[in-house]
Image (cartoon, rainbow, N blue to C red; front, side, top):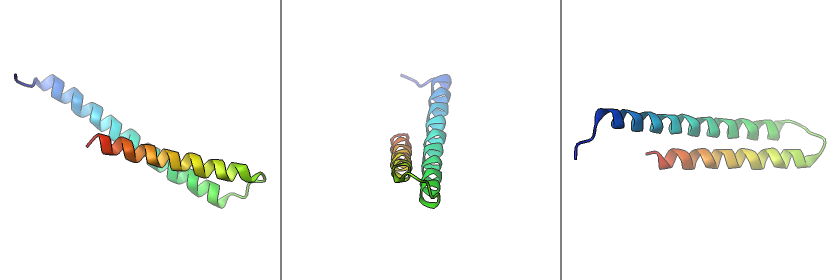
Length: 69
């Protein structure tokens, strides 16, 4: 069975969108880590929340990127 050009193009675009989303997750996570580490917020729980959410975003981006290879 031959692969049609339209199917291949849509699959390529879907993979490209997933990679872009993965890069956005990683960059957002790193940015959140930096803000949480440098900002002196009154309740320390906000710092810990920022570090946790930033780490989760980085991990999600890495997993998303790895699954689209």
